[in-house]
Length: 346
Image (cartoon, rainbow, N blue to C red; front, side):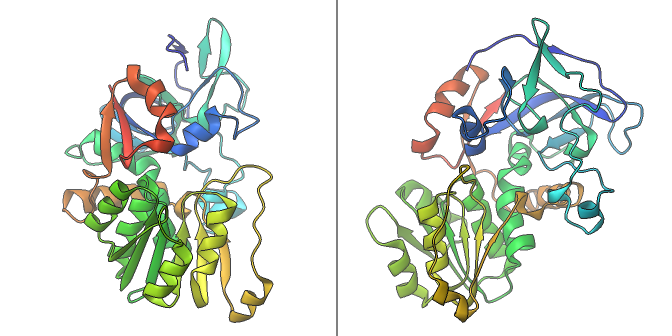
């Protein structure tokens, strides 16, 4: 990590320039920093979960204007490709994370600078595709709004859109960082009858209880699969937030007959998972979730209203705040952090 001055170009027709107010630090950023995205060009500005105030918009942008308070997320889409047309914008084939003409939005000493997943929010300003931006009410605190840009849309969205948890279902959540705790809250909102939170850090398990988990399992001291089976007899839904082959296999092993394991965690290229083939006869399912199946401009305003009405706890989700000068240390320490989400504020 290095703190540098970069040049921000003027917005093209469908772009929005935003003054960053706050940006969350996510494991995906650490994943990119440590080589998990081999195609990531350098130099690059990491960061992808943010909120700020619109400074300038391109001539073709509608629904967003200078002065608007907005959330920025890697959930933009074209709206017209086959996947968008079928209601699955998370699989858009024309993400437009870079400019069609190949020109850079950011430069450093004349060199092109890559924006991580088309955002690059670890900076005082962002220049992004308009479809990556969703407006929020002016009374929504922007440090809390930033969490809607990834943690909440991914975790809560996985419960709503991918797993489709129903009233009365039993749920296990493996990994209680920002995304996992958002999934816990999603399960509460969905009406799950039992919500078992699994993590290796007692501090995060305490947060899970605060956010509505009915049971917790400390995976550092007990076999999480045995513990969940003992508590529930097997769950209808296991949501995996870690992205490791071992925890994915654990999620599948926690299921009851006809249960579904939904993998939200970001695995590394080449990782493989082994599951007992005989369990498939019990009609158990293993599926993935990409960005929680989010419909950005529908879901983000909804979640903002849930926060403002006291039904979604983002205050506890924002566990720590640092300045841009503290970003490097926060990224280095993310694996051992006891806070649910660390937010950089400007």
